[in-house]
Image (tube, rainbow, N blue to C red):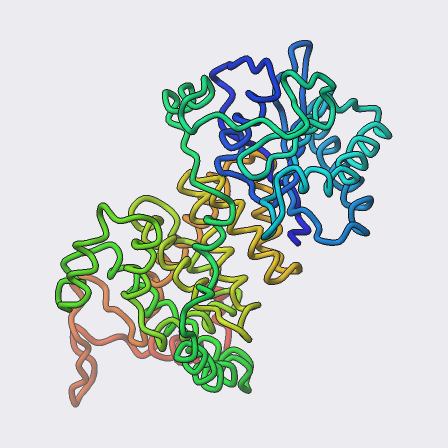
Length: 450
């Protein structure tokens, strides 16, 4: 279960659309979130006299009914407190329960099974003095209302959802350039190891890489081995980015040439498979283990904009898919980087999904928690981008100004020569030589004070 529920901030609210019925509410949900929230409970805040949509929270539906009371209280508090921090408490709430039927189960059976959870959510919001205006269950292509008593618009057996792309909301979203990226399950699948794949070769590569890299990171004296791993990891990662970003580089390999040529026009699964083909198990293992170092991960986060950011996002997705058992927790680093790259390049729904999975892999992963909170609170990623740019520029400047081992002679100075019989025109006087010697031995000169 995703224990960090803040999936707020949907599409921009610049275009106003009036929703007048439960059917229109059900149809609008994917456009508010950017995806179809399979196996999720979603709370949406309403503000003002006309019920303007505000903050949202989303969480996976707990499989155990024993968790429902605590989950309902937690969700209600998160939504209300989040709205209050942004300026105003909500004046109403709309609740959605979305879950596909189990084998042999119907949509109506799902609705009845989740009815106690729906009631808990209404009670939790009511205890905070916020009314719940509607609770919808969406399952098996149908929607059911737990609130509406009119069987003409909300029959007990459910009402079919509108055909995709035929509603006013869909037309308005298309005009505004808002896209629904498929279901939450599909988006998560892009960031997890495929269930049907043979992952034994990747597991062996990860075990072999761990035997080499982990001792270096933990070696004595501290930092020596870690620095070596960091430079090797970043050098390999840069090479991987070139494979994604420069077709000419990939064209040297016949197999990879065909992969790149076929990427355009393919579906999501095919594009991901093409990306997987660009990295072999040993390369992926070295990167996954190397990114477990915090400083290495932070350096990798600098690939965040433009074509470089897009290539990095594809790379991090590949690495997340390579974190096969028992290396599941290692996915927190590439998943967090994927979330950051997605957020930085403007794809907030994908960012929330990736960061949520990172917290599933490691609930205590601080970087993922901070990014998840910042993304969901609607902060501008430019502040973090600016910090990372500054660090990159400062590091480059430090390399350029690093002192060399030899002293650089002033322009126009002639080489010093010593001839028998005393100094010549280009020779430093004996007094100056003694002063220089004193400085080298730690003595202080009387006039300069150095």
